[in-house]
Amino acid sequence: MTAVSLLGIGVTLMVLTILVAYLESYLGNTRPEVNRSRSLYLTKMTEKGVGNSVTTSGISYFYYTNHVLPLQSPEATSIFSHSAPLPVQGKLGKMRFKVKYTDAAFWQLNEFKFLFGHHFTKSDVDNDAHMVVICSSMARALFDAEPGAALGQEVVFDNKTMKVVGIVEDPLNHGMVSFSEMWVPISLGRFDLSKPTFTGSFSAQVLAHHPSDFQEIIEEYEHKVSQVSHPDQNSIESFNAPLVSHQQFALKVVVYALFNSEPPSALTFYAVLASLVLVIMFIPAINLININSARIRERLSEIGIRKAFGASGRSLVVQFLTENVFLCIMGGILGLLLSLISIHFLNDVNILHGAYLTINFTVLFIGFLLTVLFGLLSGILPAFKMSRLQIVHVLKKQRS
Image (cartoon, rainbow, N blue to C red):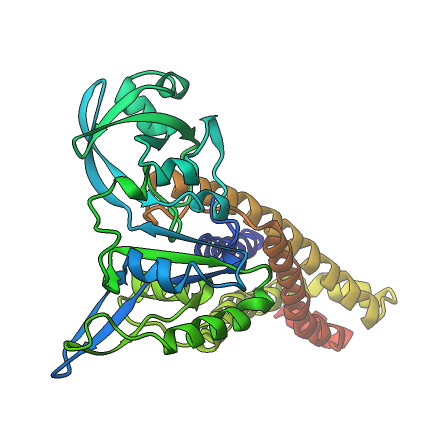
């Protein structure tokens, strides 16, 4: 019974830790996206045309430079393309890697660990400098050498010869907007950046000085856009490109990935999540009550003898509660070990498709305290019933 109790507590804590780690990989400030809590995103442009036709896509560079970049309230803004697998020619031949086009501000908003070299600057982008930043695994694959050997080497991409000026550590978490294997100046893409259209293949990130500035930024943006006329007024009746928080953006991605459906409101999502956590914790608590009751029934002779020698009901309650709390502490330690092993395994086999899990020790500690609390509560009822038993009844039950 002790083994079953320990396993139940450990598995419960492990499941809770993995659940939180998975959500944090999307919702938390995880490298390189260390500014998620201060960021707003512009990822979708919806245009309603004549005859109620609706088209949805990313935003255009023209829309960004005219209606996002001029905003005064943000600390910084950046524009970037979606990451897509494309062929790149290196020393060992042509291979496909994920490529993202970005501006220079992208490196300010996202914190990559540069192993060698540096990122391209605004001057480089403005002057169409043929340079790229690649990740360390791509450097090894292209040049069959240590990552540092790729610095200053040339790669051929999109019929252009480009120089590797920076090598970053592989992003462990595939992230929401930053992940790629090669980053190219946006000016080198096959984009008509000056074309006066609102739809395109880009997204934008808007960095606030503080999350409390979100409302001010959104109001400035909406006021600016409300005064804008669509370039194609003959075909487009209205357009909409909302700024959303990372939480809203991430919830949509997470819920769609898990359930292939549109997300509920943030309040509903967190209410469901809290209910799920309570259920995860409540089921083992019920199990512990049953196990504790069974353990007490097996120890009726001990209870009877102790009562016969003058043990009070209070001392018996304290004894059994102490045993239960100690059991929960051991189960918590087992849960920590199971969490470490499980998260390491999930990261190695990549079952979660790029969501790199890390243990949040604050959450683990809170889960540990909750486990001890539930263990304490689950032991109160059986211990109280045991303390009320009469000596004669205990010995009779034991004899029968």
